[in-house]
Length: 369
Image 1 (tube, rainbow, N blue to C red):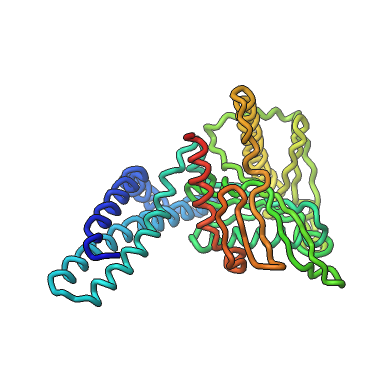
Image 2: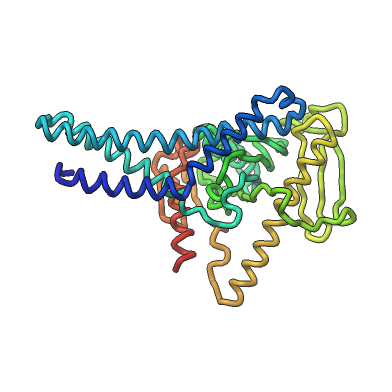
């Protein structure tokens, strides 16, 4: 990168940052932070633990969000000053340092810019993620647990709180299914591109002959609903079953029937919750998940109808979406965006931002074609 490019590049980054700040509406975020700070200071905040966790969690996420934007803006301003001083003093080392910082800033600003592409009706909501094992026996249930770890590690990297609603452990290895919420603004819009079928290819650790095994897991992402969202759910359409919470290997972890399973009879949609000790709390949490899934189902049906009317052949864009190949070579590849990484361990450890950003840009380009 030649020195003469610095001023123009910094100008472009400045314009992008200004656009990002406008879209994210920093004054509005700061106003919400002030309101939450007042609630946090209330002496009776923890009388309602669920609300207290929501308030403190939301405040933590907003603080991190605003700090991220302000930090990038400060770094950009500092880089501009560094370039000017380096030119005036003819300091080649400082100019190289500025060049490296600008390259890092480019990557960081592009990553933040993706947020401005999330403009769907529910994109700004928190997310409920469900992962289910598919074909592949023990390898599939093990893969399901690997994906659960991947997404929770991703959330930890971003300091997003995760609330596990339900985990159905397999009798052998891994888990049959897992449902958890990611408590962060735009978590739904961000993670929704992860919906679909994930495929793992590796030497099976459960095959005594050391053969290569292909297994599958399905990821579903729905938005957390608010009280203003209208979902008609008559009591007679929901069957309620209670049972004892279970742990790894099917062992009981509770001596009472506190876990709750809800079945929506018209659609056959089933959700479970066993993270709380109280049956009433589990029922309330399960109802939140059920309503979110029914809303997603309703929206999917509406989209399918519109796609049918306009002859859209890409209605099921998220079905088969990513391969994780650990043998005979190491590669994670997204089949929609063609984005790939040879560092499979890093991906499974939660470094999936590049895949998510590519998915968001890919989906947005499809919507604007």
